[in-house]
Length: 243
Figure (tube, rainbow, N blue to C red):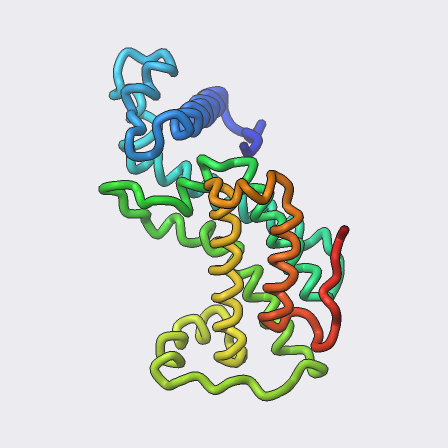
C-alpha cells in the first residue's frame, strides 16, 4: 500500500486513509466471498458506516472500487517484477527472465485473491476502463524488453521464421508501438513467454499442481526450460539450476 504524502492537508490525508481502509476491507472480502459477491453494503458495514451511500464520497460505485483494486493489484505485481528485473544487474536476458518469472510466481502465491481478480474469472457486468491498461502492461513490457535485447544482440543474429502475412497483420499494432524493429518471430516468442508464464503461475495459485508440493522447484525447472525453448539462453548453453 503506497504511503500517504505528508504534504496533503488534514482533510486530504483523512480521505486517503479512509480510501485505503475501504480497499483493504474489500480485498479481505474478496477472499471470503469472491469478486462476484463483493458488496458495497458489506464493506460499509465493516467500515462502520450506516449505509453504502457513505462510500460514494470515495468511490462512484462498485465498478470504481473494482477498478481501484485492479490497478493496485497490477501495480503491486508489476513493481515486484520490476524490482527483480533491476536487482539482477546483468545483461544476461536468461537470468533476467528467471527473475521476472519468479517475481510473478511469488506475488501470485502470496496474494491469490488479488491474482484471481486480475487473471481469474471475469467479473459479471464489469468492464475494465482504460485506466487499467498502463498497470496491466508492466510485465508484458518487461518480457518484451528481453526479446528486444535478443534482437539487438549481434551475436544472436540469425534466420528467424517468416510468419504468414495474416499473422504479421495481427501483430502490426504491437510492432509499431511496443516492439519497433523486432522481428515478427521474436514478438511471437515474447507473447508466448507471457502466456506460458501466466499459465504456469495460475496452475500453482489455483491449486492445480498441489501434488508437486508447495515449493517452487518444479516451477523453476519449468521456466528455465521455457526460456531456453524461446531462445533467451544462448544456443548450446546448458540450462543452469539454482539447486
